Amino acid sequence: MDRLRAPYNLYSWVFDGGRPLARQVPWIQSLPPVVGPHGRPGHHPGLQPGEPLRDFGVAHVFASFNDTFIHVTDLSGRETLVRITGGMKIKADRDESPPYAAMLASQDVAQRCKELGITALHIKICATGATRPGAQSALRALARSGMKIGRIEDVTPVPTDSTRRKGGRRGRKL
Image 1 (tube, rainbow, N blue to C red):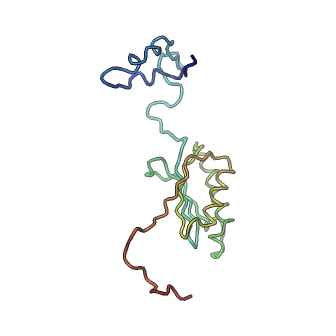
Image 2 (image 1 turned 120 degrees about the vertical axis):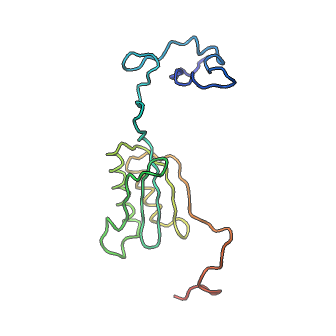
Image 3 (image 1 turned 45 degrees about the vertical axis):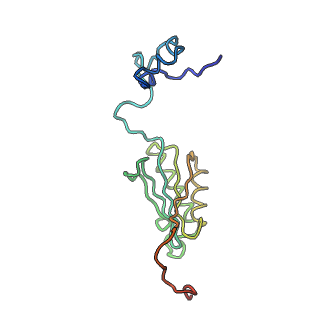
């Protein structure tokens, strides 16, 4: 019987019914203790206490008709790490929203994320009029630049029912 021999000391403090996990599962007690980099048993070699977790970030991609915003935050969404738009990469106003501008912006975002130590991104896409081409090319460029992609979520607001939109019965006259 092969069992996964992970750093079980980390999970021995999980309580269920008043007993530690090591007492619930008998074979855990027979394993040798985990020795960390400093020789102390139970010391995890990875993240130190108080050190922020910077492996994952959340990339909020907002693609509108006029521009594409790529905004990377930490997992809670409170701290902004990188924010770049298509207009910051291309100077002509009419060229801010095309896929090329979104691709340049996402390549710059990926480079800045790697400097900060972020290797993987969860992606939230908000795009007007279904998924705009800017959102698709931004996502493709993030994946090609070496970033690992976690979850991809469409957070475009869809009204279930609301007040009547402007424009009248026949819509906006162009």
